[in-house]
Length: 320
Image (cartoon, rainbow, N blue to C red):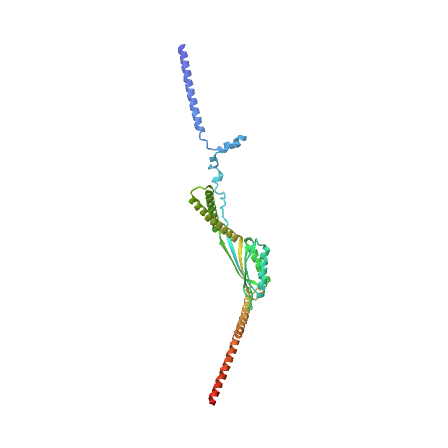
């Protein structure tokens, strides 16, 4: 009986040892299966419910997963490229040919168009018009017009000239890119502002020796002067971009009506130029005649006096 009990106890102990060993093996296998879990962490967050799920953000690598269609779709449109618009300063050169008496009226009509826009959108820079006794002289007008209405303003100028009986002879539009100058000037202003602030703070706190403070005052004055100059240049550049320059030249000629034949205007100009040349030659000859008449009279009187004197001496010599 004791032997049988010992065998049962031994068998039960061996069974317990085997069972414990199997449980340990099963538990270690389960741990190895759970460790590699970076498969779909976003789905685990999506399946969670309740307010706690809203406070748990998905892992960072879930958004960068290769399975994401946003990163693997090569047909998706690329982000737009940031392109800066160039800052252009426009200059217009316009030439008009009008009858001599109509130049002043056309010039005043153009000036009235500028005044109608107001001083903020149109400014008078210079104006020249003069008449002489000989003929009608050329005239010109220089304006600054807001760039957004420059093209429509040019059309209004041409219409005013056509109303006065003239026609355009020259149109030139040039543009200068001042983007680089604007960027460089703005960068220079920022640097000078930082320098002035630092030197001013040094003077305010009185840090350093007296000689250093005196040198700092001189540096502040020089930097402030450069800063003011840079700000003035920046305002000038922005004004050139905002306001286009208009230079208008007026040339006296015959009023030419619009015609489908392009040679009509040229023939009229040639006839008028020839007539003007004949009148100019006649006028110059008349001026020369008026200028030489007194001297011719003096010369004639001298000649008559000398001739009479020689005749008298010859008569006296003959009598002697």
